[in-house]
Amino acid sequence: MDIYSLLREFADSWVLLALTLIFLGVVFWAFRPGSRRVHEDIANIPFRHEDKPARDNGATGGIGAKAQEALK
Image (cartoon, rainbow, N blue to C red; front, side, top):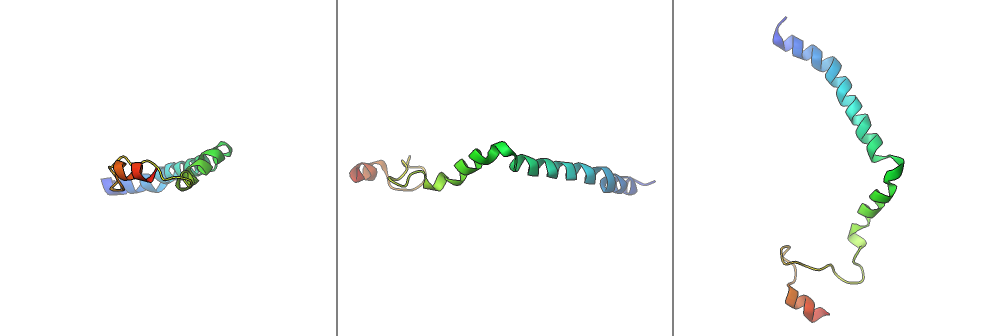
């Protein structure tokens, strides 16, 4: 038996089973009952600073610290 056929049989059986189990594990981890609060917190990141803009440290290319002081 050549190496290609051996690897092909291995991939068709055990690797398929392993990848299926990994996929099911990731799906279960994402939809587990205790993760609702975490997902809601992550989903609300864009709305955290509705009343005032987030502080800019200058690395993002936004307005500088002096301009922020002028807005206060």
